[in-house]
Length: 374
Image (cartoon, rainbow, N blue to C red; front, top):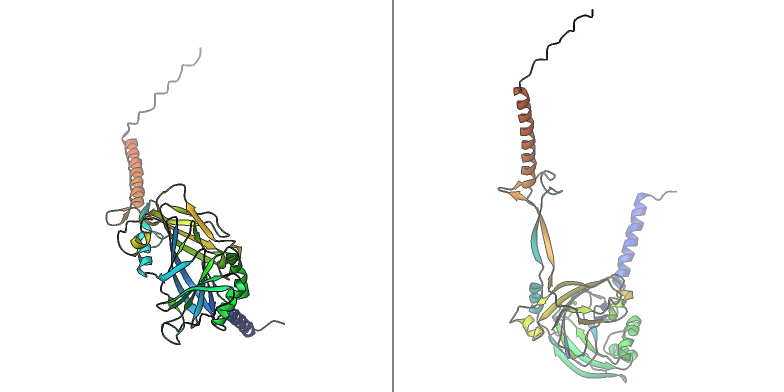
């Protein structure tokens, strides 16, 4: 018995609705080098995360810009760091300066023969409030080493000897640490790392958290350039890393850590002498811009560690705009070439015919009949 078309359509609609509800209800706490922990019954996700990292061999700075969406009124963001970190608000104009410095170059590339969007194929011419901070709530294995309010953010700097203690601390402050995130944090505890726990909330009371947040600027001691990525293995969707690195030389990642091969989109000395980019760079004037895709986040097996590249070869992404080669008022060169070749061939034929007609026709030689024999 065949299912009526209307019934099939209804079943498909219900299946899609169920999928969307499941997607919305799923926790979205992984985001690049940090973890989002929403309150029970709320959802939050990171639409875009862009980070600038500056390292001078002794101190590392990370300026991070998050764009979030969801229905959460506040959320805890946890960032693991190898040493004690200071936190301040970042400069929004930094990322504008980075976009300007690393902007791709556009070049025009001409082609001779017409393509699908050129004449005659296309018929055209050929031109192409501040929320109230929750109480500290100390746990046996958690030490709150610092706490301050930065704009709309409540920042707590923590040390934790056990993820369970960190989970209890978050619970006392109104958040629940998911079990998968608990396990993902354990390697950082084993390595003696610390945490920056930040309560993100909209300035207006009762509003939901969304849009582009104020950048956060973290500074900590580090004898190696490391960018924490391990928590991204908890993400349910493919992840895209966009990272700007300021150092004395061109930098590269030591490994793929489970993702696609990182791509360099820009490398070179910065020319800014003032403004947020120059202030962050200081004496570290070489900028490397990297992107990387993680199609299977569960394959991420560690944190990114970056090292000096073999050469300080400059690089800038180049985009080509293909145009049909023309002369004068948009006349295709190929058309003139074909027309000229056809005219030359026709001229050759006509000259040949003319020469053939003017050639003198000689009469045939007289026929000599031999005399009869004897």
